[in-house]
Image 1 (cartoon, rainbow, N blue to C red):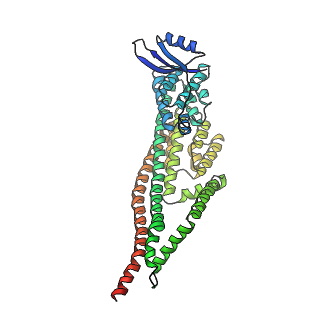
Image 2 (cartoon, helix red, strand yellow; image 1 turned 90 degrees about the horizontal axis):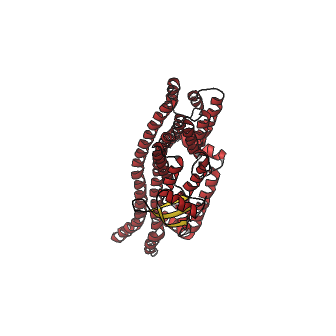
Image 3 (cartoon, rainbow, N blue to C red; image 1 turned 30 degrees about the horizontal axis):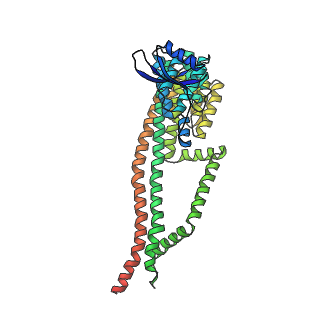
Length: 404
């Protein structure tokens, strides 16, 4: 069904802009008049990005957009607004043409008789299987508004954890890259200029000075080759680590590291517990919930562990017992799961465990960043000090020779 951008006068005489879906321009004008609005301008909606970059940005639906859409739907559907009108209202408020186009396509599918979860399935890159499963559970329970509200809370918390992970990874990388850039600049531009002053000396230079000069010569003569080798190595390792067998070994090694392993265990367990809690709390089947929770994990060791849990649960075992048998999940979450199964409050117990682990992860991340920043600065300062010392030693040696 085509969509049209319109400018119309409301019953109060105010100019309003929006989007409306109709079979033709005439039908769109008729629909506006039914709404007691006087159409001033009506044209078929088209995307006209200014550049390739803006087109790519407009066509994508970010996690922030998805969170905003979910909250809008939760508020409107929860207040009794029909699903079709809720989607149309969210589309009218969307600023990105790509978001608006996606929402209008969903509205058209719902208008044609599809359920919301089925309409979302036509856009899997925007609405993943977990999202669609929760919406389907909400439709089955008859309380879609409340389910969407809980889904919005889940997305908000997941985004917060993801941002914490990104901060933990990006900040040290930026500091390390800055340190490397400073050292390369010193070795490439500063040291060669100073070394020119030592070429007229007939005395032997100190060992540290000769090492620094040698590194500087290598960077000047083979810098581009070294850079190309590093880029190729990074690309090759990325492709290698993407292989399932290699990724499983690497993920297992990462989990065994002293501090990083604990943090990875916390974030993966929290993600699994929160996802499973959200799905079970909204009435999704157990096996379907476990499958969706598995897809939300990034660590292959945890994914394989959840696969084992699915097999054991299908055979009749309890979730807590199956989790404990994998040997991957912390004792806290298995104990809470056992208590939840015994009391019939498994979703609440899983959510409680997820919140605790997320808080622990955030606290550990802050401590790690607090220690890592001065450590990188100390290493950078030490490297710069060595370069300065390598330059000063010949000067001091020459002064001693002259005075002597």
